Length: 376
Image (cartoon, rainbow, N blue to C red; front, side, top):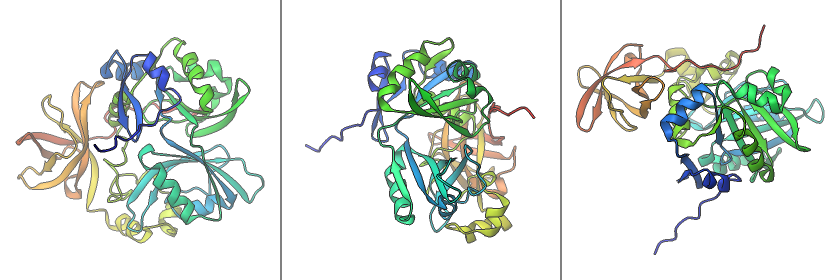
């Protein structure tokens, strides 16, 4: 008989079971896809109050050394050198054809001196082994410390700020995309204001032995509920956020994926990262295809892999993510189409179970985002 892979467990695994979670294999881990209330209620609860997610399967690492910001810039198109201590940036690891090996968050921590940089990296669970091997191979002069057992929790939703401020008062004034080093019961934690739901929220990186107690403390507070992977996916789809391996892959570039906002003018002009010439050409003339929002007519959701047709029936693209929007009570999707069909409102046809379903190109995100903006 073939060997059955042994799934890894996060530090919150026992808590998930006590909460009645339905567990599924995901990126090599045994993860909660939903709890007894179900995906729909979990999704709507996060939009209305605060949802607690276990994202400990994600890859976390510290990258340090002389000029680490500048050296990591050679692998990504993001503007890292202008990061101030405590600032965080979304970017992508690229291959020689500007294809996205993975997307990641990079935070600049305080260094030993003006030449010594310390960076906190968070990468996707399914790619973390390959990502860290790639970074180590490309930047051997830097020290990469993979935080293999560290827990990572995400608290998301309109009530998240008040909940977090009750435990970490300093969090109330933290800007969006920032990180602070705080203490929890005497142990250091990394507290960041970010997330992947379109809501205001925080992520907390902490020691594995402290994770379950901290999660239970959060769940005991008013408005906080445990949320699984199912609602996490529907929330990020409503927010128009990409999932690697689906909406972005080594065969898609940041500009094709409509992620040009993550590349500064300086980086686009100067280059100095893998695939820079191709991205500069796409920037000058436009990519041949683009990621767009898709709004099917009717009630039936359209799933990943469905062909996208022009009004005349010619195939012009493919759906990369699709499902039903609990917030809007309609089906929504994202996919790639030829650039000439990417204008908002352009008519499309989607192939669903052998039948053509009318659709149109829709504005992304599908629902308004509520990221925290510091008072000016």
